[in-house]
Amino acid sequence: MPIDNPGSNIYYHIIRMLNNIGVPEIVIIGIVLVVLFGSKKVADVAGTLGKTTKELKKARTEYDKALTGTADDLLEIKTQDTNNSMKTKNKVEKKEVEEDV
Image (cartoon, one colour):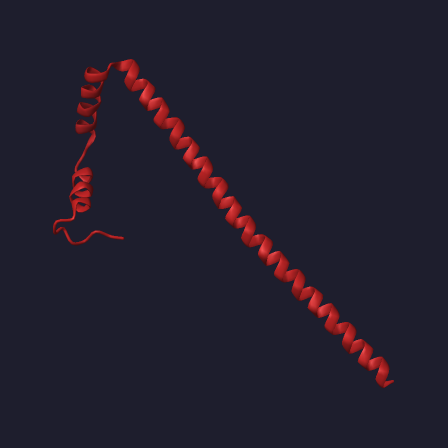
């Protein structure tokens, strides 16, 4: 949902603020975090964040594969049903032709 109306929507202001953050601001934030929490704690948090991101990507990939697999299975079932219907129809037609002869 695009946020076009600034009004009193807090999300509009947050997104607008985040769009204005550049490299110097990120470096300053990093330095402040290191000073406040220490380099070891910041490294641990960054590592945990990286692992979490990796797990989320893995879960999303598995979810997409499951959805694609389900769609493929349904298509295969429909194709099999169509083929079975065609075979049954051909058998009935063949039987009718033999009865006529």
